[in-house]
Length: 255
Image (tube, rainbow, N blue to C red; front, top):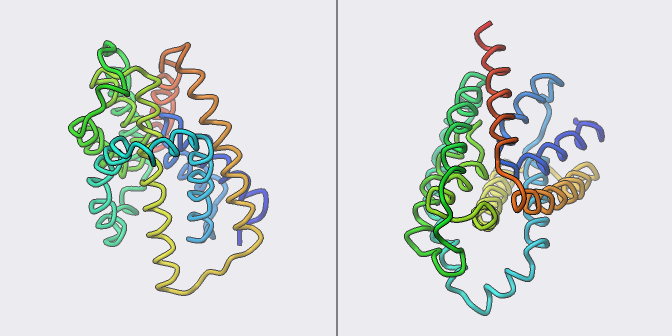
């Protein structure tokens, strides 16, 4: 069983890297290999995702309330989520997703999509979320989000980059990315709960509650920080970080 310190480390990784365009999966694999977290249960994994889900719902609670009154944007977010659900289900149920969780795959994906993020971030701003986020835009970004199932790609990174390619600002692209995270995180959590119910092997415990709490705290702080950061600065620091991380990982693999 994982210790409280190990839960804190995992919650920090989930909360910080889920919403930054640098791939939480890459950091989970690296840290898990270093600390040999071999006993991370499915329940803990679900609780980490639930923590992030709670944080993003609470942060955007006013926006979400407005969506209830004006459902058009909510429908677009749901449309953008549709592509990833069947693909993600197939990958998880067949075990293919675990086969992709290698350092080699993560290293190359971090490099390739770090470059993709650089290209996307150089796009001119031609659209606004309030007037130009259409069903077609949602599907376009949703199709790119499928690639985030590959460890190392980064869900926030690929959706922000695709939003920038469409002409949305960094801030608007990030908001779209975070709104898309809500059904994605919910789907991942429900799938995990279903698997727990199917095998009946995990029970709620104190460490699971700690995982939810700390994941929520770190997720909320990261969301607030990132949205303020990108209103003043480019994504260069994250692009550079991805390139350094990818070279480090590939160095481990090939040297």
